[in-house]
Length: 321
Image (tube, rainbow, N blue to C red):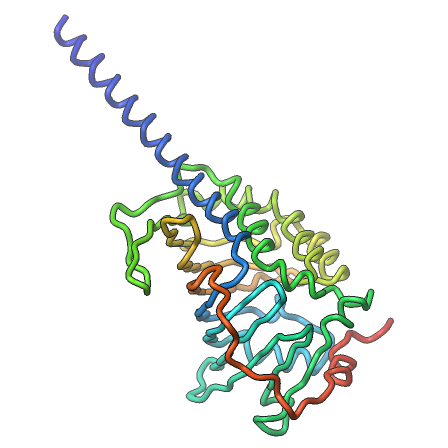
């Protein structure tokens, strides 16, 4: 009788532990999803980040020689950036530094968005450091041929939330982990750290979720101006398994006491099949957000030496069929 009681007690304890773990993991997943939605409330912030890219030719393939040349500079590179973003009115500044793989030198692209115009200097196109190209975003927004508009640029945080929810909503809660100890942010405050890891154990299941969400993922990018209709159709018509996430991959976010994501790290490996040939791709990204909703003023001034970007756009635009 005592042995049966001990056995029953052990089974009950194990069941309760399993139930508690499941409940805790569900709460961890809910916390991450809530933080993704919370990012919609960011109306101003400072940011800093970096990424290392190893991208196959197929993902950035273009029929235009100039576009191909520009993309070739970044597809195998390290990029660093730092800047300020305000939504209403749309004001944005950053200094983007690009270091091609194998190179000991880098080049910088300063960018400013103010009064519905985007100014930037690109060493490959501009003759001098003080010469800037300008794009009228209001005019671009009114052009039916342009997928990118002033409104879509304002809604990048909403886009990030939508894409994040698409990817993570279908993942089993058991793959979510919260670190036992909080992490320290740059300002000295603490934040909870939550991670989702792609391993050999869950690679198949997560890819099944990803493939189910992929058409909607592509449609969201198209609707927000980050994919042309032609490119979106091309991706949707490709085989469902044309893009496969690969292990090991991982995402880690640090969430502050107010629910905002303050630090985000992504290390993703994926394989893309182009013309029947699989190509491996690897993206490592780290981004931080600070001074959220503090309306930080821009420090860059509107450049004086400005040229219209219309002529360059004509060169970049795909050839008419």
